[in-house]
Image (cartoon, rainbow, N blue to C red; front, side, top):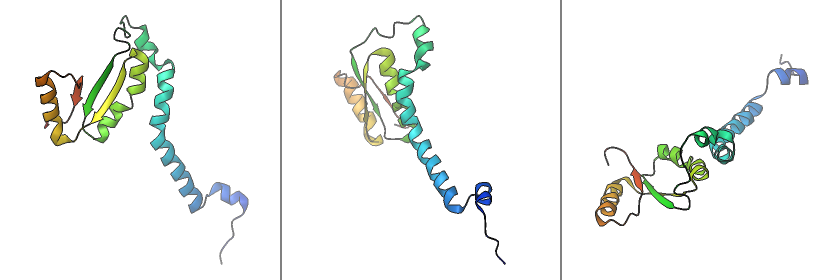
Length: 127
């Protein structure tokens, strides 16, 4: 004999579809959260401790710098800080993703030819 659930039971014991929907919503919120929060952080008071420091963050305002990074997920974390950096310093920041096998060559060529294409680069130690 199968017992039918009443509406009250459904509130206490959500069905499989409801759980899947909630899980999907949490997954989407988790994936989009850093991107949505990044813009909010750049405009909020999270920069207040930096602004309170006795540092002239705007001394290079209006400048543009490019950072070469390899296309790895951990460098995406660095890229998410771009809005905060730009809001604090007034410096336009650009990231260029360079394949791991080429980043060392590009960095050496940039340094030796003194073209100053990259302000710096970030790669795994083996590169």
